[in-house]
Image (cartoon, rainbow, N blue to C red):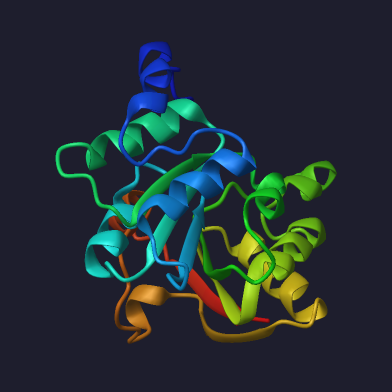
Length: 211
């Protein structure tokens, strides 16, 4: 179901704690205010309702988590959950993922999360997939040596496409499963979409990849 835009919420975003102003210089200025220069960055692209980011930032205060989302109403829904007691290591960045390398320096990001990304199943939309060849090049530029990408999806075709692209692009790939919740994997943080799919009995695919 298409999300109805919340114009009032979008207008409030710039004044909400943890929401970065637009523009690379403004973003860098914001993160430098309260984070040590050695703080590792983990980036989630497409933040859903924000449960994953909030849980991860609460669990790992030593890491700065950045949620990248171009849909402002989606970002408002997520950022609103971090307002009562804002976490200092959680930032929301209103941005199209294609611009990531304008905001992060080469090698600045330790990990990227792709949780239930839009699969864009039609061939003519391949360039919009977050694991397209073009996006993998961007990830390579901003990831630190040995940095990684964690992907979860309920879409088997998108999972197969992503795995193939990563292997062909020279990434090391491991911890591959087509049924995460029956794989014995420990440490998984369940997203709101994941919870829904589990209720429907849909297997969750997962992998990790490193450069």
